Length: 224
Image (cartoon, rainbow, N blue to C red; front, side):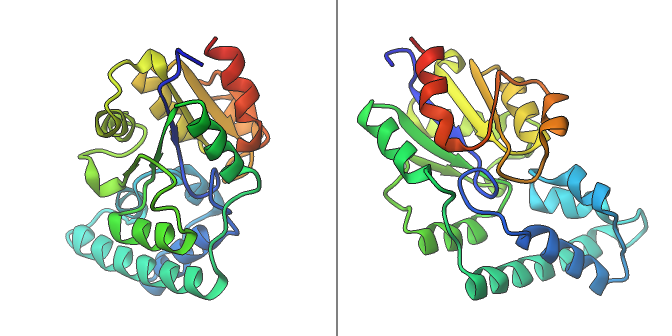
């Protein structure tokens, strides 16, 4: 695949198994502060920067920023506890795809709406420190998805200069919008995480796959 330089993967729901820990921690942290949210509201912020998502769910008012920070800290504490108690696992086939890409001299990056602290917990638990070439977190950029900056930062970190030689993979609507806004050649949605086929079909994309395990065939046919 001489025309593919980099694949940028989302984490939770795309490469990392999502067993509902994130929405559970969100809901509990908000309820702790008397804020009720609907499943549709939670679905609408999936894939976003977690700080940004919390802020969007806090009602407007004079103490909004303070409340948002307090809720965010509570969310992080709850999610950390859930991950430590329940463990963190890669989705089936992910490590095989990583190995296949490396064998074909393609660089790998992870991008996520989690902050660096939470991301490092995941990476350490998974043992992925040497699996990828770059890891870009929500607090590494000024604006999270659907802005394209996580993808651009991954490109910068891996020395890739052309979006036409980049593929992105994610499980949420904002993942696909970010890939579109970045102008990548291959903008792949997977059905292993937060959003359904119907939800992802409404967003800009080049392919929808059941899981990341199907990626080699897709990129092989796209980047010939």
